[in-house]
Length: 387
Image (tube, rainbow, N blue to C red):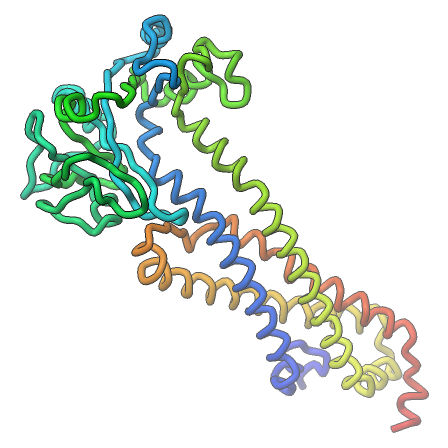
């Protein structure tokens, strides 16, 4: 004989009463996880686009000069962890991001330094392309940039008429090769930039003998939050390091994360309140069943634990179904909606799914609390007599 208090038995007998509540839970998980994933995609997009900062760091002169001052360059070179300092000239090509059109640096360095940096980031030229000729308006892009811009070898990647209000180059620059690998990086010849962009500042790129020491060297040269405590002068140079990039990004997104947290809290509260009301309705419809069970000897605590089991099982099933629906929907939208627009999302983002954990907990606690009050006042005799 099946247990009359079995949650599975109740679900089998009353699918029309259980499915609406489960559907609400699925939708709430999908809503919260999707919003969290899309907000986190901004961080992911910027971290991916500027992934080269894991391998080298830019020292950029402040606006008072076009070159990094010699005394600042000497500080970088004297550190025993420094491997190479590279004189770099740059111009920009536009890429698509969540913020709209955004400039991405095309790096002009000598051939030996270009080969050194390519080896450092683990990239190589794909067949069918070549490296930029000396002094010519040519460039090579990595695969992600070429895909983002939807260009192929032979296309123009920067010109005076670039969209988005970004004038990348006074003369058209042609793509002559594509670099293999996921790191976003672009190169041109240093002589071309020096001859064409006469008033543009010149940067210095530095690397470390051990790539894992780069972040520590960045912190010693110019700490993120207390830049005046480092060995470089903030009045003379600006350090474009990974730490600075991530700190400034997350600081600018802090208000958005706060809004997301408040909205998620409001959604969870409303869903918990609605589910608690549904649970009370279902309990009212089962009063006769609970009264009979109480009359034949079931303790109130036994009845309550059964309610806890039913509610928790339903909410966990709804949460799991919502997580699956979210993953499938985001996986589809990743390739069809977001990536073609320059926005990267991660359907496997565990942080986003953690945001939904309070849903089954809140629903269970709210529903059980309201039912517990009604069970404490349950009078099985009067209910049975009325029937």
